[in-house]
Length: 267
Image 1 (tube, helix red, strand yellow):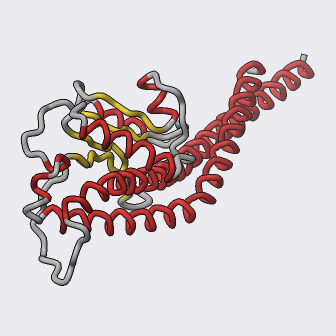
Image 2: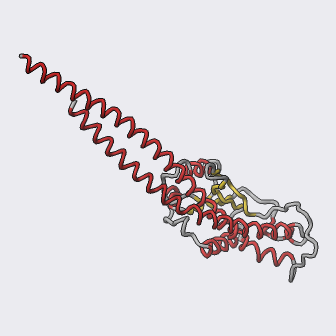
């Protein structure tokens, strides 16, 4: 009986330590949520503005001749994979890597320590990935695309739906697809549409990439907050159950001691 009580006391202490850890991580995630959401919204707006410009240009007959809009694309695929830097975020990273499995023949460019670990690349942080980093990567990828080193470029990231829901998704960035949209009257491009498009595409790719990064980070923070809340509730429930079991064991031990004392005094 004494051994059971000691074991229960040790388990309660261990789970209580885990509870403190989950609470601390939940608080850290909460402190990052507002800043992450603000950065996500700003990058969304920037990417949307770039996308609208490219959509207008894609409707031009001259831009149809641009190498960025080739229609006979092959199957050689490069995919930028954006994952988190740490675990303990529910299914955040697992959902990203589950989507990766749907493109087994692609060449992957990992961003985020978890992605780098998976693909054996040098570790880099998705949280500290700057716009300068995105611009350099976009320029390199656009150069390779023009040199026909691959046929299409996609980004696997996580879409922020709400605090409760985040969805892994793939966005195809290159080649540029012609999108039927409302005509923009009064838009004049100098020196000509194709020159503007070819100049704007690296900026466009960088904008889409940084927006995906910011949205993925906001999703990671939200997923970690919810995971820590759930883990904290489970830990508290486990402590309550163990405490009840401990109290029963202690009561049984005390009752047994009293019984032995009474039996001893009677003899």
